Image 1 (cartoon, rainbow, N blue to C red):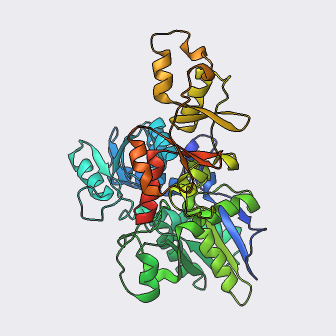
Image 2 (image 1 turned 120 degrees about the vertical axis):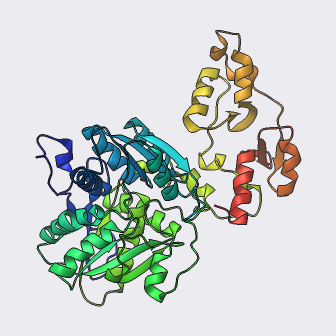
Image 3 (image 1 turned 180 degrees about the vertical axis):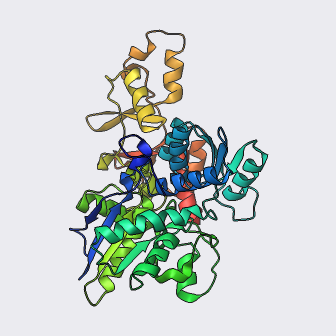
Length: 460
């Protein structure tokens, strides 16, 4: 794969990413190195395959000048395609499962891509499955080219010709294992093919989210019923054509909680802000390293940057909504409070705050109710409707102090109130204030109640 020299083009900066040794995590007797693919210009390892697949399609005539790239993607391949397409004047249509982070979607739209969200709860063969939908769109789009990273041979070629040789050189040809995941299969297959030919002793280790079929298939030979997982970009409910599982020597299943905890630990101890799939890879790499009885040199990847997941795996409220939290269940209404006041999580207003300040807080923190506090006591409540009614038709309304217009009467319940007794209260109030011996603990909204029910039923 050839690139324009880096001094003349952004695309020339793709690849040649740095490798850093892990210093502060428990790796047993081993040395663990992380290849920082987050340092690519598009922020992920997928930059490599984007330019490879686009240039291959240009060479064989499948992609014409002014054409439209169409792809099914978990986000990073889409970002990479949009980046390269922007430099080469192609249009981009991307079909993305609806579980992907807002940061990725905002980034894609800012790059000029057309984003179509589709269902993440359906499997291959369903018309709403993201790959089926992307293929149909490409077929009906004049000049459309379905990139199809899952079957496109230029995907693994990118890793066989760039990623693997870089690792081999950076490790001074002294390497024992590589830990990677499978989304499309290109990384595993491309790197695996290189080392099968160049250094067959290097073991390929698969890191797979719990719910994916791949690690169980490697370990037991059985095809399990696919589950669901929160980690983005890796794990599959089918075997991609580009995925050669025969190259895998060991496979680890990592659940969402361990993946996310590892991502956060890598940030705290190594200073590397990585994404959720990187957490899965590094968790598996740490397990592999700790199991070894003799020293080995191991490489894994920081596939992309955690700045794409700040609203998810680095957001404690999102984690709590997913049932991933360090909060101990109390078996009372505290389990339903998303933002406990005593932990400093409640966004509140003072009676002297203006409606402008309150509304700004609502927008910033994406909330619709704000308790009014004075001397650590709950004295009132404001919601979006209260602000709207006060400022409509009044040009000075936003300057009004909250204390003059707040609701002093609101629904309160004792912390020991049975959960099912909340339902009638939501019929007359948009939030319920939970109290314990006169002390305000926090608010419960209908959304909080729904999240509680979802966690109890195990629904994603």
